[in-house]
Length: 567
Ligand SMILES: [Zn+2]
Image (cartoon, rainbow, N blue to C red):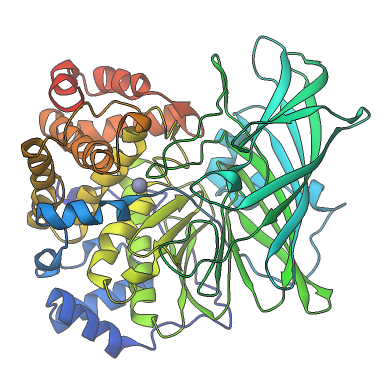
């Protein structure tokens, strides 16, 4: 479908003028940006003018003229580089951002703050409220002056939404996973009115099972309070999902997190390190976070207030719902630029001196948010943040937040558009529609990968999208087939290795979605994905949920495609 034929969506009309913060810098680096795109994309001055003007005015910038040279510099055009670079695809988390206005939050305290209404766009409040009772976190945490220790208390109110009673609650201690390689300790567990509760830690330290004083009946709630501390690591090489590196502190899953509950019980498995670790139900969050004043905090949800805590420290009040995670990053010396897109405030944080790439990240994130809102359904949150962090050339998705490896800001800027598009797509295929990253990693990764086809077709044109299809997915999969790196896409992550995982869960899964699209056509393909989001927004799905909709909405027999591409 040609982009120009797509009718405007009421959800993608941008809001009013942006109220910029004093640190925002924008439209002051035109020469650098022009130079960047002329060098990387061989754009003309006319291309540049359109690009920059569209970004500034917050229009639907995916209508801009394509940049014909972009694909020629794509790094994934040959199989060998693909094999060595596949791990830059590892994705996963999100933080959310900052309505920064000073002063105390209103009401009786942070427990009274309207988490959903604060963080959601107006249209999304109704589907949020229709979810029924959710787990609700109230977290108070503080980072030491030196940044080595994070300590706090989390109270989680857990509703039993099952038809059977629960004898226990299970929490994941993500900092103890090999992915994060930190050390979290829980010093006490108590319930309201019952005092200390017995609890047991798994051998690997990632699962804390809390025995309740009496089984939690269907429809009832239990509030459990856990005191915790985390020894925050500092790394100087490789990439850092959790901890300090280069004046950036990454804190996904820094609090004890309620595990996913299904008919099979509590989900307690940890995927291999090449797969994503976070697997959470959506929840309401209210966070009070105190840290040294020289740190800027970027987090999922919205920041309702920042107050002086004395002795060179500030306290941040952050809320959000429904969030699949509340991830937090802290940094020194960040610059930021912002724009509006798809009804949301989009903010790009990046190191000083990387303004051209930081602005490019903003423009790609805003364009992707608009385009994906049209293709898959509206973006529900008020904010979306893109943050440069020490992930090398990798990215990671969190709720309302995409973390992009700093190497893509410099020197590998040509890889930035693809990765920003991929991570932004996870706002639909992770943050909204969730799935088990161990059992079914191909579901969200395949959809996020193939979303880049939509993005490239919308931004650069059909030829660029076809080049992406060939260079990034078809050629590597053919290479894998020829070299024995093959197998069923539908296998669990722990049945793959670090070579087969990106080829199967990313590239071959993308080819499944490409084959589906070619079979049913663009219109039915996107209608199916929109139905998928509407039906399962903020839920956790299995492949059968998606394949069932393919059968009913796209009105096609999906079995031959499943046999050819997934099995
Ligand atoms: Zn991903």
